[in-house]
Amino acid sequence: MTDTLIPEIDEARAEAERLRPSLRTRLFIDGDFRDAASGRRFTSENPATGQPITEVAEGGPADVDAAVAAARRAADDGRWSRLGPGDRKKLLIGWADRIEAHARELGLIETLDAGKPIADTVALDMPETAACIRWHAEAADKIYGQVAPSPEGTIATITREPIGVVGAVIPWNYPAQMAAWKLGPALATGNTVVIKPASTTSLSLLRIAELASEAGLPDGVLNVVTGPGDTVGEAIGRHPDIDCVAFTGSTEVGRRFLHYSADTNLKRVLLELGGKSPQVIFPDVTDFAAVAAQVAIAIFWNMGENCSAGSRLVVHRSVKDRLLEAVAAELESWPVGDPLDPATRVGALISKGHMERVLGYVAVGLAEGARIVTGGSRVLEETGGWFVPPTIFDGVRNDMRIAQEEIFGPVLSVIEFETEAEAVAIANDTSYGLAATVYTHDLDVAHRVARNLRAGVIGVNTYSEGDMTMPFGGYKQSGFGGHDKSLHAHDQYTEMKSTWIQLAES
Image (cartoon, rainbow, N blue to C red):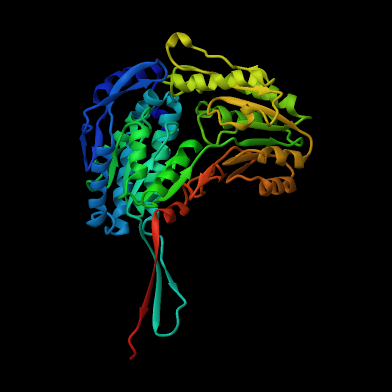
């Protein structure tokens, strides 16, 4: 059981201190660690204490050039792309096995770096990271091409080939998992990768890349360049020798990657962006405790730092008060505290600046006339960390900023409705369309509303994004160009080739 890997708090603190000197902090390029070309480094801070963890190499355009050159050599000489799919599968599964075997170490690293509760990083994030790599690896030798129905005397085939060098830029909220969502399908289909983690959360991916090398991935296949988005991220987006960029992050930054592509080589751009996802509660629900548990998970899990967080509670007026009472009761089992404590369910926000942004939205909500039910202020300030408890606003109108703009924190806006049509209209009245949840016992309502919601991922009577077999992506300003997860993710990292063969007459 993965739960047995979770250390007790004193043990976790001791292990974290022992781990600190061995943290990988240099760029990983062409199978080896190296300093940034500039020699510059930046400080990675612990969100739970506000104190430095270590200093990390600050890459720049020259380092991206070196990483892309290594990835291009590895792509062009066939050391990975021409390796048999079954052989790629074996190497990737070996890598997944190593990630799983080091789940406790990697979870500790990510808890220190991201402020995430250790019960999540060790028991959920790292096993799911390994499972994602393994799932895509298993698919590598099970995807077939096609033979077209061509005329007599010809053979026509439709095949898929690796697109080449993939650039990936990932966020800080799920550093390992979001990397796996890109790396799994990109590598399984034979591409090489240059990936940039968020500058606030670089440490787990550097160690994961080292494990990939230990598992036998050839040099140059996976390269990690750490550093700020406005230098490393832009260099990846503009690089003329990168064939595809996959980005997960804010809609604002996602727009820039479309400009980078348009301004340079028209590389393929895959964007998974923000959300303002509704949780729609109809009046026929009866188990308020069960619904409240799902509501809390949807918005307060991972401190609300989740693109598909259910940040708008669109609830029928007749059941709103009972549901809020049940949510309040549920929150008694959501302690805010030290992320190294396995009892903690709400850890620290990623940075001081982000905490101030979240609290700024709390002030905006009050100014707009909404009412705080619980939370709304910084807590545990004496730790030096950046903690905000679960916060609920009642009396929210859907045109308020707190209902329209992505806060990316533990803030829930409660909006009432009377009719099904009104609920759907409120749910769809946003520039985003990533996820939505519907709670009802009426099968007709469930199907009808799920069909009418403009979102890419729908949960019915549960907050869920589905498992690895289900694509993940959004409508409107939540996504562009592709999806993560499932076999659909393989297609977006490949080029389709049509081959028409004229047979000689006998």
